[in-house]
Image: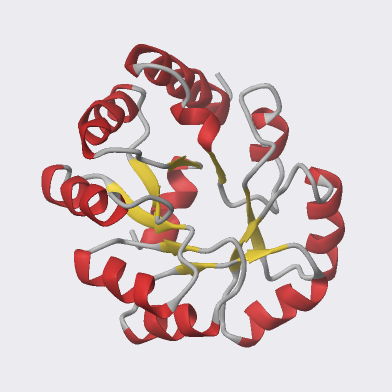
Length: 203
């Protein structure tokens, strides 16, 4: 199963921003205990590279990606560390080229038809819809999806366990991303993820 299909199967992409390296193991252990075998680690903090390296080395069976990747340097660093996918808040030509050259799935953030057309022109069929809550949520996804039936969306921002069922039931939604899955301590993260997985499975 390729990476995008794995993401579709899990349906949940936790967006994690680590403030220090000591947070990595407890957070990833909690995600695994919550039946979520995936994490998008954001390039927002000084320890991001070390966190990604630790995650990839110590959790080889997890689907570890890099998020908030906004330039070529970050993309290459993430790829060299061994990430399985890269996510950006918007579209970067340089990030796309780095991903394309290394056969790494790239999920750029979009909110407009023009941005979707740009993604399609680059052969991208799964895009991040961010911030989903601000830009119309499912109503916008349905409208954009009608115009671009070949594109699937990963809404991020504004999704949580209260509305997750509506999102994952939509045929235009590939998966849902967000930091709501990693809020609180290890026990709370585990419980949030277990609930989210039940929702995804329709239990």
